[in-house]
Image (cartoon, rainbow, N blue to C red):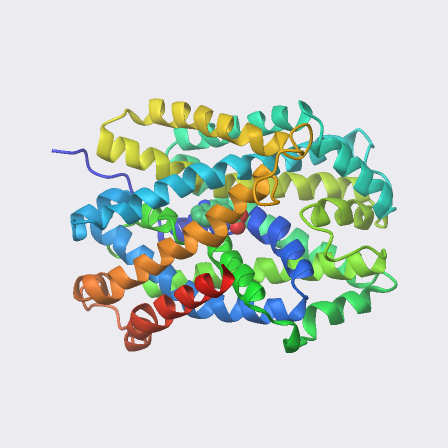
Length: 443
Ligand code: TRP
């Protein structure tokens, strides 16, 4: 007999852990620069539409699959159906390796920015100067790798602490704090002279700017930000007690994640325009704009340290969910001891991430399809693997195991779920067709 599976301590604990997985660098680092590079408000509209239709439905699908099976993604597909379906789980575990490898690099930058704020290196309000500092830092062969190593060690440490003690406890206090800090910073950003132009770029959609590429970017952003398509939510829900309300939890997590992304845009976009910076500047956008905002605030350094600290924690609660997928697979399916698995795969994923870091500096000559290694890892996982995973998860739930999964989503009929027909319709038709169409037209 297997030992009884560890469980989250409370419903709030699960929602916060799942929201902790969702809210991270995807919201505060990736969302603003992707929005900036894809036309602003038009992208925001698409992103929100995809988040609350396909994203929300797949979130619930992953929750129900995970709790019904009480297994990692590979084991879950094997237990619920078998056949070739576990391949979807393997794809997810592979995506976990890839995403965490570059996620650790960017999270390392966040830790570095705590240190650089304290040493005074970032005290400037000139985006050009801040851009040079950022560029110099990420292209350094050693410094970012050291911070990446520190972040990966923290990730392993939290996973070693286990689901209940490690993950749940962190999320409860620090997530609300990040939220409040965002609100404070938005007030500063919105009152900068020239902020209005950023606001209109962000909130007044010009739908003629939408292209197939915008769709692809919005779909990738929705999946990445909600931690969907690779079984992270399947894994978390596998530790969830059978009493909790799944549709309600899915709505909470999706809304919290989208809210933080919207707020991050409200923070970054006005500042970008106020300082005359380029919204399409790419992955440095948040790291280059924010220090300029802090420079225009009383107690700016204190706010900066607090912000990058909380962003590190937000990244940590996300990276933990990525490593947890890999660890749960090797523990459940391969009999590896949990502590061993966390340490071994933490080290391996760190090593896979080193080329991503170097690809921004000493290895920048080496590109594949015009993309640096980090961009390639991001593109392959976020734009291809996650939507493909989501495609199969929605088909699995909509067509293959629907009655069982519906029973799970309603706690065997105990909890009313009036929107079930809509959910089924999205899983059966809308999600597979839309994802396939977006993937094909994107290629
Ligand atoms: N959603 C997280 C973020 O926005 C990143 C993340 C954590 C993730 N787990 C995931 C992305 C699983 C895709 C799949 O930062």
